[in-house]
Image 1 (tube, rainbow, N blue to C red):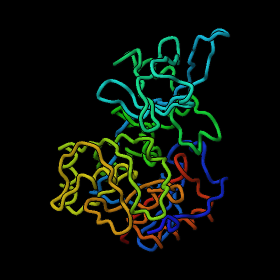
Image 2 (image 1 turned 60 degrees about the horizontal axis):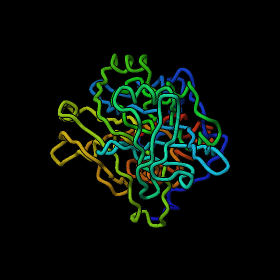
Image 3 (image 1 turned 45 degrees about the vertical axis):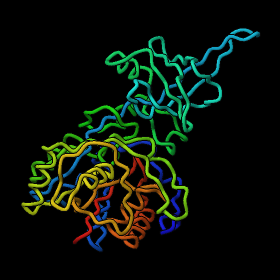
Image 4 (image 1 turned 90 degrees about the vertical axis):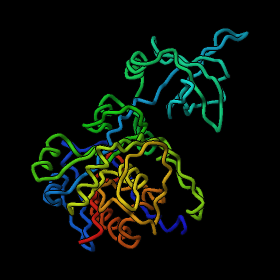
Length: 350
């Protein structure tokens, strides 16, 4: 299949740079079989049934974007360079892999100062990434990072405005628990405590899994034949408790509805023909049309970037022609797109 099969024209005015308040006031496009309906997230409980189970990703986004300065002595005196860092993932040796701009202005062994408490030295460079060793570890590091760092907003938002204190709440799910993501599972941002209570009152159950969303989620597909694309691996975990809950719901005839593509990718990574088992490790699963879903019966998700792997995933779930129809509908009805935008509930069967 060709990358152009997943392209569409999106007016820039439809790219959301802030979420709506309250979260459940976002619009919700329901695609159920061949039917399309325009709803709001607050209508979600009426679209689900008692005994359905929503799968939620409980990863927690860290304030991974840092601005600092490198100081270097020269014959003209002290020379300072501004350095921007986006943390990617911790490594086993205690370093952090990071994107560093401009990387050419930082030499091995030099230190970048981010605040009075937080600094890091460059240990190595590999594959365009720097390996940084921070001066703090554990809770001290977490506290200093929280004070100095900013939320790593997606490039299409960061290009329009800098991250601010509001994003530390807006770009985090209300059930976030396990630190490690550098991007949010954004479909979940629509669900506040009031909505979770309303869904529970409807008889909808919840299971929690963990997938630490990486910066690779924003990497563009650069190949014409999508079969040649290599996904960035992300760490995930499905506990025995979550697997048992999901298998019990399936056995009872309930539907499994992941909230977000990250939760869907994880449970399909852990799926077997006999159901879902406990699972832990990196996944680089790439879901494209023709994929056989073994666990997910539907998906709640936002509206995605043209030619992205997420467009390929939703096309695999409900069909390419159906995706084209609902995206054309969403654009005509001026739905808000991407991470802070509106939502869709995709149910392949009527």
